[in-house]
Length: 325
Image (cartoon, rainbow, N blue to C red; front, side):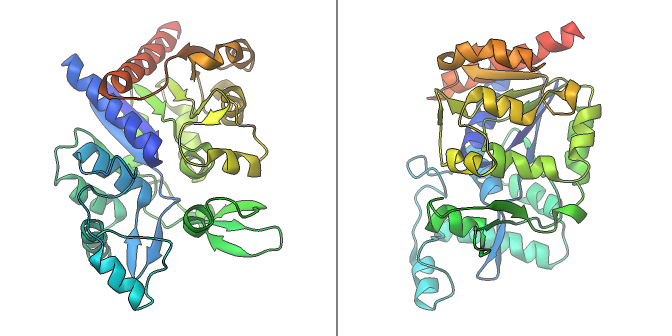
């Protein structure tokens, strides 16, 4: 079976790890491709930073800092302190020394003419990830926020410095209109037997991927069933500040509302199925009525066992939808 996951952020990283764990436990010859959000990427101190990609990379490599939820474990921050002293990096964004090594290597390869897809392959080859990571696009589509009075900030400043508390009129992905899907991302969607939307932030992690011209068309014509996993459990985001992002686009922090935001594939959206938490079982009939098949299952990824069980539920649901034709 060829499994393709569309993901970003910490929730996406943990879900992908659960999919890998389930595949390894099953002993079956499944492959896992991950189409990774690039909307969070940005330039800092002359270095190209890929927050979502690196969260997934480090999580799968066993190198992530589980307590902070980002960066490498066992980090030091001497270089970051020196960069702040020189005024090259802001105080509100810390880069660990090991993390900086990744950014320096990536930027060197990019400056040498390699594509982001090439670079992702080189970074992933260092560890036995058990999956292939593909940037959604090789073009830069950095996300900015626009305030009600017209001020523009990079998403990372709004998210990290302002903790998503600054009023936002809209999100913009710079240059997304002319961006193209990365060839490997399109190939992973086309070849998939199952496509899963991870429980990532619907607005700034999954949203930018879906807005790249050509991605929605690829999903619309994919032969694989598409099953999404809700990032909202019991009316609250599992991690991060997704509620603030959803509010900007007028979507409630509700599992059913997020499903309807993505929409049914048969009605121009992207979903065939949607998994909600057991806490949100009452939302299933309304989601079904929106032409999206829904099931309530345990969604909390507390450890390897619960994460693998969630992946198994998602894959079994997708198989059931495929069997229905």
